[in-house]
Length: 143
Image 1 (cartoon, rainbow, N blue to C red):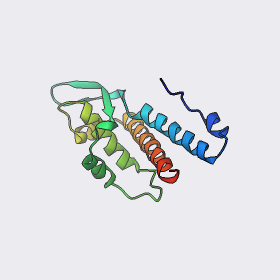
Image 2: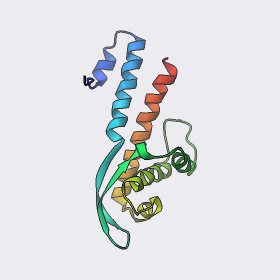
Image 3: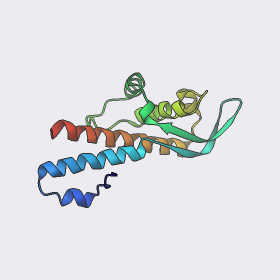
Image 4: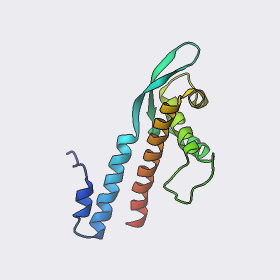
């Protein structure tokens, strides 16, 4: 049986704090699942010498713990644990994109992304990180 998509209105209309917290967690999980994998059409294609890549797929679920910690080790730390810097976000996105693009490495992607594509990648990675962090926070604070 498929679960109903949770809306902000559902959270606002919750009968008590416990239900509100559970609905909030589910809402953030839904947001993370929407951003977890996908593809973007590049405004400036990437080239690896043999091919011209005009569309790039990404999948954050394939990131390893080592890749995550390397991406988060770049840039300054943020006081909000649910937030990452733009540098951390682009590194995370490039790692996720390299997982779905055989023969190309995260640095190749990072070095060749055009401005508009990089801004889009940063937005996707930061939104995914925020949603997964918040969903995890609900589990920690409301068990």
